[in-house]
Image (cartoon, rainbow, N blue to C red; front, side, top):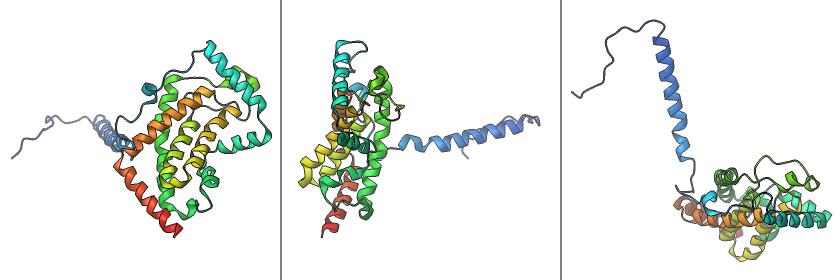
Length: 244
């Protein structure tokens, strides 16, 4: 018979027993909820690109570099046309439909469920590494220095690296894997998603460039995931079938 741990044979007082029962229940519920949290990522392996370690810090506050960065925002913001502002406002939504003009009318995610699922999972997985990098650098946004650059609602997150630029880069690189014949047009959309953030005063140019570097690193990490490769191949087959 295997050895077992036993509680001492001391009767529990009536007021103590309910407490221990509640504590045990709390611990079991805590373990139940915390267990899956360690395995939320389907695509990124442990040690996925860390923006805080990968990227150089942004220009220091009050430096000549920051002043030059801010001057660039002012110039771009002032020179924007109404059409550019409309495009920038639209791309802020980060919809995958932004890539439809580059890919063509057959890029209809309502008819490509496997492709849509792949893209939505990529979208979900990017949140944590982007937020981690932003919270590490804690860079404020241009309109927080110069209120003449305010346009639209303020944003709660930090500026560096640009989440839109990071996402635009990753989305474009994933879509290039699915539509390689549209490579240059797709990559151009990804770059525009980032640059549009300067047009409306939400980011410095250096935020955008950092986002492109970070996005390339994240896209490379996705390629190392067998699960991502499996889902990518399923999306390719789905797109191929839809074209036929």
